[in-house]
Image (tube, rainbow, N blue to C red; front, side):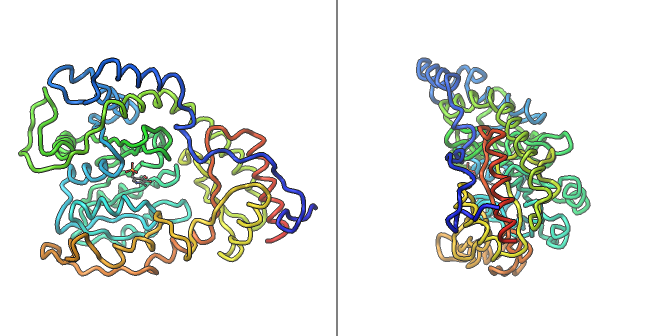
Length: 420
Ligand SMILES: Cc1ncc(COP(=O)(O)O)c(C=O)c1O
């Protein structure tokens, strides 16, 4: 067996690893033509008084209705504004608690606070998604909704989550920002809960640089979200507004963003298929490496394959393996390190830990409307920190080929045989 590269032995891999992006790497003529078409039309704003259904944004909404099978879709200017609009759509607001996993993105917790609701943290399990067992423990009289975050291309275990939510009469909002186009037992992500949200930001599977989409089967949720995303204005043009108006934001998407994403939608299935094939190859290759463990969800239908994640017996071993793998030519990271800020992890959400708002008034916790007295601390989700502290992540995209996957497996196998 060769010596480890970190100790002066030969590297397993010489070639650079693939980029950390998916959709944006695939941008080609389709996207360019669509953008030019928008410029040539001289219509870069969605809500002109005429031609509502000809807008790119409207077409994008049709695509998302088709993708998810949902009756309603609303294109917005980011995944964060999609979450905020959806929460408003669901009627979540002051006095309500919203449960979210301790591994998400800082935008998810920010969205809850933006609608004046109180975030309640829930553990994730080995699948990297919301732990249904802990979810049930976190429900109180004040719980209005749970945000099921489909993290790193992995679908949450929706059957138990939906069963628990139904039993307690709480809404489920699916945050599919990182798992656009994914599915769970044949059902599209975003379509199983009361509403679903997608992000089209550069790091996502398909992108328009910035952008987002809300989907739902509930007309009232859709109308409330749409009203909120357009400053309290009825944006429907021809649809009857069935709700009373209230103030909102400007979260409108531009025609350029929508057109770019329409081009990307044509590539979505190809990107996902390529990633799934290689993820299965990697999972199969790593399955019998002593000391390496992986959730049974990895490589299954519930996994889009945007990254390869595996866990080590301890955080110390994870750090050792990570450094050795880097030296072998495989860029990777330990997901949770106490000394390295990672805003996907709750313990780095300082404003939440300190219950700090923008005005120094402890809002929404001390608003008077909220009747609970929740406290946060950096150790409150030990299961999440334990798993993430032992987890190594290698980013993947649709350009990973058999040889790349085999290099990854060979490098992990070599490193494990020396270190574990
Ligand atoms: C899980 C999750 N939720 C929400 C968002 C917010 O999306 P955006 O960056 O488009 O506002 C992101 C993306 O960055 C995310 O990863």
